[in-house]
Image (cartoon, rainbow, N blue to C red; front, side, top):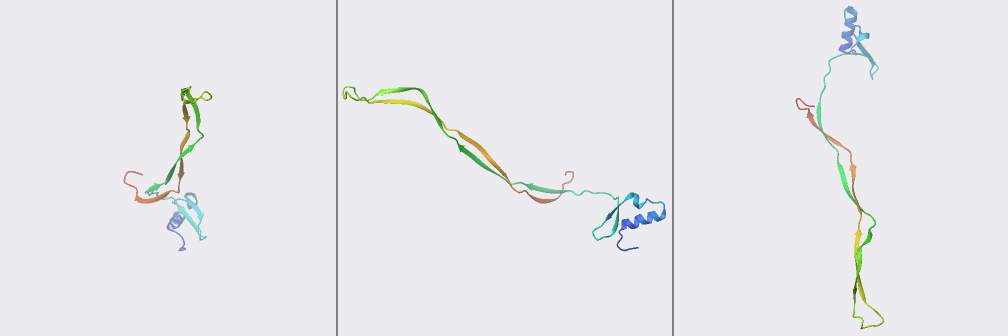
Length: 131
């Protein structure tokens, strides 16, 4: 036999020649390998290998405080307080006006979230009983 055959091909050929085995064309998958050999693959047992990885995604959060235009409004009525005595100057009068002023100072608060390239570290095989 050709040395490039694998054990599965040899088994399938032997079973076909004996007439009692499974037909290689029925139970096997034919595929063309990368080195142009005609190979036959038969069903076999499947095993899963579990690896544990620690995956990290760096995240950057930047605070945002955006000041918006302030606004003002009067609170209540003004209070007028006389200044100097009236007799001092017949042509002018001094007084003080006091007013409560309410100032709204709007600030828009938020955050900017940036996600960066994730990274992983191989922790080895999975622990028993868990995946």
